[in-house]
Image (cartoon, rainbow over all chains, first blue to last red; front, side, top):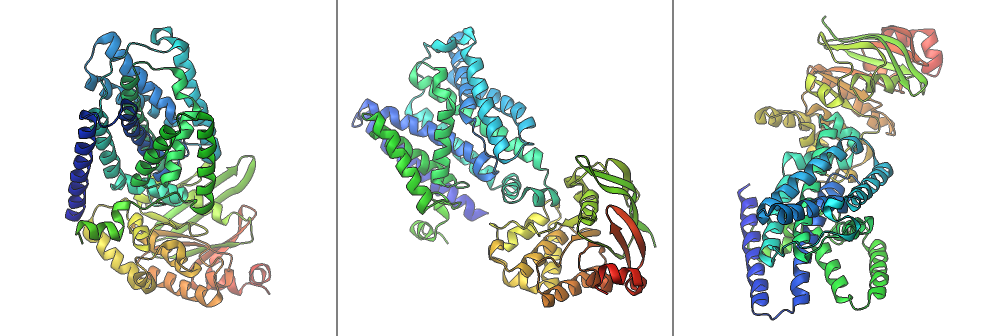
Length: 313
Length: 237
């Protein structure tokens, strides 16, 4: 246990160094505004992919509606900031709670489904959320919700991301996480071992949805405007690709997946038609040569070379 | 001896198919009871109904004088019934040790878990040798041992075994059945479903013969294996 905390401490120190370097680059304006924005988007995408990994990778429940929960968080945060003049932190917390509650309500019936049926149901529900939002005039309808203060800066995005990553890391290393992995490996056996499978599936879905809501709130306060078209099933798919690419069941994998794919799409932003083709080629190559994803279900911090580098035992 | 498990007029349906038609049976404390019968007779269905993976439409199941029918499977584990599912269903990507730890999922008594782990390793020394190995890389026999060891980790008073001989070589089947006998001697009551009727009758105290969802014969295992009808139908002459 104490060795675990030691690695935690080291990870925090490394994260702080990364933060200091990036913040330095931003403050000194060595990074142009385009990349400053992209660093924030990377943080948001990491929250999305890590929280989706809890549902898809660890618990093995194939959800295709993650962008729907992001939309709930984005609009909740936006309404609180614009219409109620609430501080940003209140928006973040409320975004989590709202998305988690709706996640739980959706999870209760859908988590009884399995495989393809669950994928179709979550896909449909994600779209329903978006279409409902599109038809509510209070939040701007199809035109989008404008005038959101730009409260998200790099520090907010980074530290919220850090909190989410550590929360989910501790979740999957707890007995909750054990139950989730058992469900993924073999649901009947898990049930036969005394794991209340419905409870843990719904719980994972709720927590994952809640953090997608947090990511949505950060997203809304980054871009001044939120628009229903940002939360289509294509973006759900995008987050899924990050998870699959990094490795289902690896948090560091999801971080890498979000980082790599966001960077690629930023680099290729001048050639949008080329972007999707390259995306497709990268994915096909990945499925050919590394179907388990870049990291499989292994954390980079558990590799021997990393341990030696850190001087730990 | 005290009745431990009692099924009273159980009816189970798969959709419109009436799979179990009014089965009543009893298992006494300390016994090995076996259900034998042909393919599709409803042996595994009966077992899955006891463990809560299936729900009976009518009838009651009681365990140690408490009604357990209708309860979810994870609750039934807490009552002290543990199942080794058909086809083993181990957690393939986890290590042997992690599989065993999950078997003790509902328990919080650390010392009890530790002593049960030692007990499992005594029954299955090969699992101790392969503690850190991924369970999916074990041989079929070792996987069966792991599934049984995992079930024992919840410290059950009644162990349900579903086709432990499935897909195993004859020598290995003998070994597994010896271990089942040992587990029983150490105080765990066993309800065994088995296609290999010869093997099952040789270790059981009592047996029930199932045919298309009904019990057609029951009685002392030795008497049944000597009976002409049973020999003809299930023991190959």
